[in-house]
Length: 256
Image (cartoon, rainbow, N blue to C red; front, top):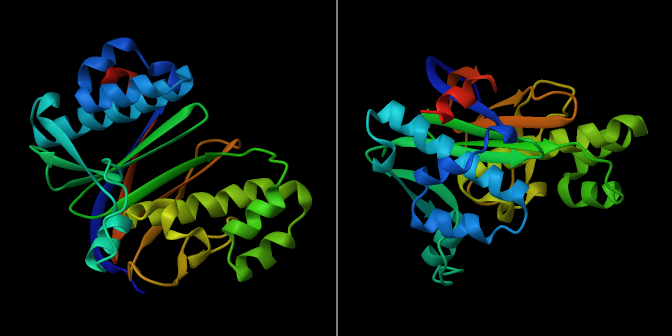
C-alpha cells in the first residue's frame, strides 16, 4: 500500500539498565509495585521499573501533567476477540497492552526490553509496537525458526550462511513481534501468520493471514548495536517521521 504524504510523528526512547534506581519506585502505582516485587531476578525488576517509569515521565511531559496523573489500562486484543465471539474473555487477571488513560489519554505507547536495553515507543492517536531482541546462539535455532518463520521466510533464512542465521532470525522476530504488539495481540497472534521482508532488506509488511489484519503498517528497524535486533511498527498509511532519543537522554529524564 502506498503511504500518504502527510507525515505522522513518532519517537523512541532508549534506556540502559544501569539507569534503574530505587527512587523511581515512587512513579509506580500500587498494581505496578506489586508486579515489580514478584520478579525474582534483579535484572527483570530493573527492566520493568525502567519501562514503566520512563513511560509515565515521557507521557507526563507530552500531556503537560504530573506523572501521577498518568494512568494505564491493560487491554488484551485476543481476549476482546474471544469475548465478541462469545467464547469468554480469557484470563480474568489484568493483562495485555498498556493503554494510557486519564490525562495522557489519546497517546499510544509500546515498551520492550531485552538484555541491557529498554525501549519505549510513543505516538499520538495511532497504534504502534516496538520490540528489541538480544541475539543469542540458542541451541534449537532451527526449531525456533520453524515455529517463527513462514514458509517463504524460512526458505530465505535457510539459504543464509550459518554464521548469519542467528542475527537474521532475531531480525525477523523483532519485525514480526513489533507488528503483533501494535495490533494488541502480542505473541498470541502467531508469528507465522505475519510475513515480513528479510532482515538484510528494507523492513516492510508483506502479508497478514487471519484476523486482525492491520491493512496498512509502517515498519522500520532500529539500531541498537550488533548484539541486538529491534524494530518499530506503526499502524498507519502515512509516512512516519521518527525521532530516536539516545540512551544518554534517558538518565536526565529519569532524574526529574
